[in-house]
Image (cartoon, rainbow, N blue to C red; front, side, top):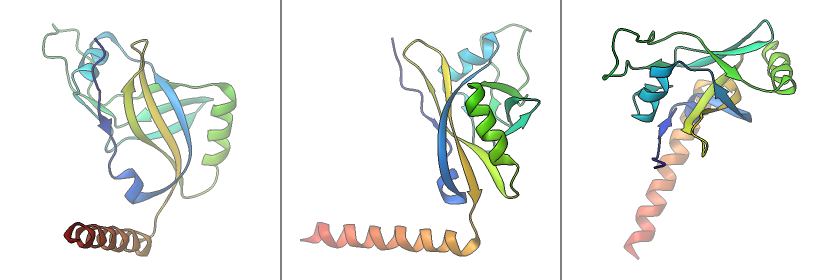
Amino acid sequence: MQQKINIVNKKAKFEYHLMDQFTAGIQLSGTEIKSIRNNKASIAEAYCVVSDGEVFIRNMQIQAYENSSFYNHKLKRDRKLLLNRKEIDKLEKFMKDKGNTIVPLKMFISDKGWAKLVISTAKGKKLYDKRNDLKDKDDKRAMDRAMKRF
């Protein structure tokens, strides 16, 4: 019954220096979980905010469930993340510094059937850091090709 849900933010490692990671539950409505189980969600443009002692994810897009009636959900509404008080306090303290953000990395379905989101504290990379990452990636690819020849 367990199917593989593969909703990943591929640009997160390229755009940010990732630090601490947390696994959070997501507060969803009925049709949203059905769309997530069909891989109809995107976290590419999403980010997290802390307000009033709660953590919310913004710009996470979950497509409308195709077999639902008129009780559909909004595509890009704010969704509450379920974290412990210690984790929320740590994230709130981290967000006080300028240039820090919280980015989602991966969404998956747990063994119990709950939707979970892996989030990470991050600091934005500069342009020269991104160029160094691309250069390292190209060098690694060239070495792998050279090793295959022999």
